[in-house]
Picture 1 (cartoon, rainbow, N blue to C red):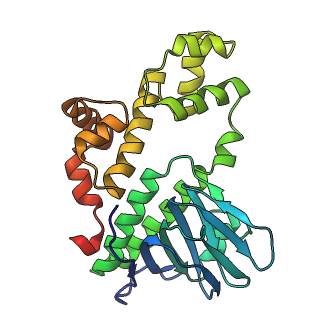
Picture 2: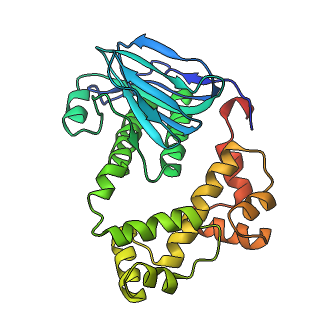
Length: 281
């Protein structure tokens, strides 16, 4: 696992045309071990991609944080959060301020509650925050506006990726079971006809329901899950391309590279170069 120091960037101060919102930080804490006990003046979102811990506002209930959980901080309460004692987590975060925040809060894109929210699709959000870090650190003409627009898009994607929102659109327990089975067993060969039978449905019904829920057929959905895991392994570990392919159930590195490029648009090696922590570039 990489041990690069925390990346913590602030904009250069070059003004933009969007005046009701500004990005005041964007960063990544790799192998974060310390705890936060703090009352914040600004609003920010954290996203934990590895490790586990807890989150609490004032003396409210302790909330469990697992990989894929996002949590807010904002003015008012004292926030207490961090990884399980003796362990670390990797956390991406970005913060905003300005009068335009109230509109984002009203839409619940910026939650102001004492909860954490599990995201269903983490990898695209991580890629977006990495791009935000790059733009904020560059600070060129137009980058203040680019960073605001990208942050708004990220908040929208995180909102629609919240597990509780997506589950509210899941039509049946049978399909919940099918999707959970796929998320747990995507490394192996899945017999979808048998899976459909086990959940009291025909294969055609399973295929139609999965396409309605995910926008993908069964085989394509499993490939998507493989590629999502590969993205995280490429960005957060030093495993070789061959080892990563084997970990997601594709033993042949050439097949893995072809499948990954079809999903991500770039080869595994190119993706790793683009995703490397900025301090290592």
